Image (cartoon, rainbow, N blue to C red; front, side, top):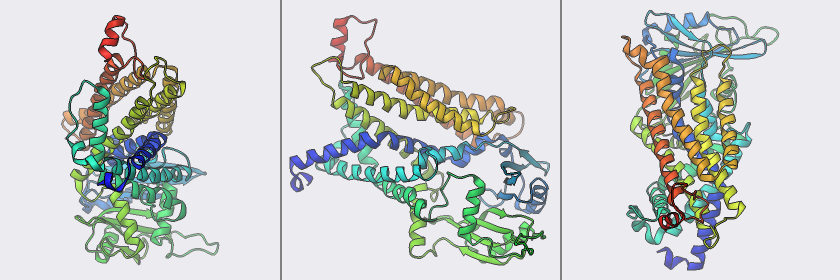
Length: 540
């Protein structure tokens, strides 16, 4: 079909465009997809990293006593974010945001089995860090979002050109993956098969990522996923969107006065009456204890492609300010909600979330293998020494891509140390960026294959160490001691274990490729134990 519509010259031009876009944007897309895969379990990762929330108890009937105790643990200027559990009936967990003496602070609280609040004063926010890496590559401010939005536009163009290239033999490519003596052919076949099978999802990701990354610069449509600012500032933006601050009294200087709050149970009752189709799962206060206090009750409508809704009301009087119900969006609001949830994959339960996770990892492999194939295709076959630019591209590719994986693992490991004296959540971000740039520097000093094997082995060791550290420090040990193990933490330990094993297997395959590949390839390293004649024979 494509062969009839386009000449061979046009196909070659499309191939060139596809390849150059891939090599220019492949590293950024790898980082975004790897971060995106883990972001599917952002809340689970935060729960894994914060042991105080694991064995929470309490039901909705205890919400009033829980909030009363929380109110005694915070500054008047602080905000409360209370998680009511996935089904809206506990266990009860909360995050307290406070601003005092110009300093922002955050702590997490969970209701313990004895009915009292258990506080973790220095909570980990490694899940939010991974979310930032996914949406902005960790670049500060809106520059990262804008850059990744432009990359997403180019990514969409690469998908279209790739589709045109493979359209004449689309079905054949689906069944082309098989064992072969040519490692390059196997990598090419794997790249093509993954690309063809996941094409509809990649088209959706390219479109929604463009909107999500560029629109925040111009509008407030995507505040649900913005993660560059502090949590307190995120709540300020949520407040503006939901109509917060429209009620309440102020003193003569324009400052809100102290006021008695309605009970949380009463607020939930009023919110449920306003939106009976929602199952309420979260209660957020802004300015608790003041006349301008606003409560936002968030809920879900299961089975809807746009499941999230919210009711905003005065925390003092119960006056309803706004109601946002799934299925009742109109115009641009419906479009905004649709592409946010399509990108996040939060409307299909655990099966869809696991599917998005696998697609994210597969996408990372797609961009990594694409860059490796581009470099291999352009090697000079009649000379042993490859151009410096080819070697440099190979070193940067493995350093940045694999350095991101190792950096995320290092941040997760740092998250387990936040309970130690002098260690704060800032260490998580520092660990990621130090490891990321150190990996690039290391690979620039090493042969591309040796550098890749070094980083892959370190990544494998780091991710395999995560469940061991978790088992030793908190999670599983408490489960074995008589308290039921937290299944969310166990699930994340299993995922980290699987990731670590995959890095170990990839390290072995990469080293084997370097030993048996073509001698005039940038991916070849001489085997010191082999005779010169044997090396060339094994590479043919």
